[in-house]
Length: 524
Image (cartoon, rainbow, N blue to C red; front, side, top):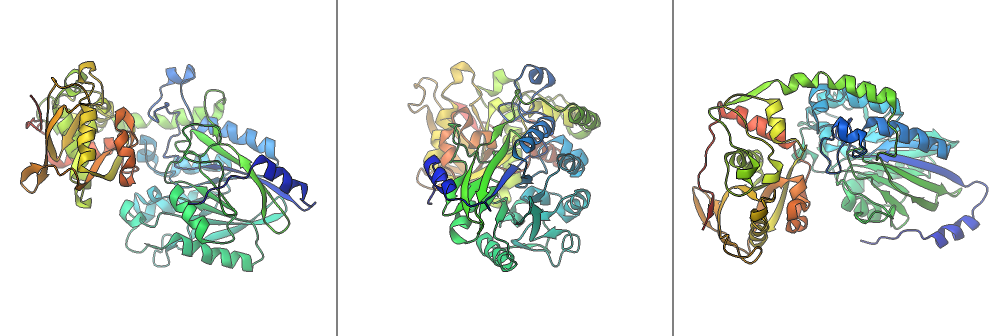
């Protein structure tokens, strides 16, 4: 895919030819916030008050409020937009659904947002309630909602706003496969994003609009395709793939902005860790003369707004009730101690891996691999509360699915047993397969001696050249705990339901869970 970042020289050359009618606009943007109203750690997990006070946390609504206010002061002519997926990810969403998101976004003065797939997690009803609560338009052009009475009058394909004396067209995109990722219901159908965007661009340009911004919850890759396949789109503000674009961060996946033809593409990772700030100058014909900026990291240097911080603390009080809710029962202690789970098969590992696989088995997934470092506690016999589940799985990880070769699975298991002597968290707990490893072999030199995969009611040797569908968590899928081979996984999707929800639902469905070991991990 062609990518080109306007160079400083090019910007200066273009600026030298600019006329008095040039128009400058700052586009402030967020995406994939996922109910992270409280600050998060560098690992995107819970970050406590003590760590926050020590400057170890990022994001949170209180920092965003400050950053948005400061950015508006620098610009004098700005809009604030969101690339979707405000919903799902923490207990704040479980309890408030979209109400707290609406309150925070209204307070920050968002201009518009697009619909993310997670906005459909609880069906059109919750999305409608959210739409009724916000003071700004919600956009989605690549979906037919004409048969969905709850949405057809509140979700728009595009809008025209007047900003700083100029008219700007805003268009929304959501994933084409949202019907597979969430619960939009039978009355919403999705279509090709490029075709949908071009149709809407044509309508806007016929109205005389020559500055068009697409808010796209479609992924960095799809955004580049849309930019290449359409004409008339000036800026795409992305989401869905949790992509960091930057000119200074060595973990960035591309330049900020990424230029595809004349279209500038931006995205600002996720979870409120960054506030995107793109400064665009247009000529009188609506052509981009310059597009430059950088995502602003929401670290301890950004002072938290006091009123917002107090409001979030107030909103957190009822969440204690959720933590006390009984979600299941256990017939015996479920062993999850790190001294056990990081060196061998353990009961908690079996439970979590089984729950993960059960959740996505109907998608054709046959193997689950969980890192033992993600298991943080045991569960006592008797009633199991949501608080206990969250103690076991505190990191707000999500289910991640992908396809990989049998050799990739073998390599993953080899990585998993490579640091057993150090009791490291990469030790793999599994479902849908059995494996044997030999501690007498040097790490990464063939410790894994046998791998068998479930086929029907039996197990057969893994085929190194075959392709297997695997589920893990988003941390591991993106290379955490040394699982770098998973980064190359095909058809990857990292944004499934929260692992703690998956575990609670699975245990509840058992009607009384009995922990067990079955020899799926053997040591020579």
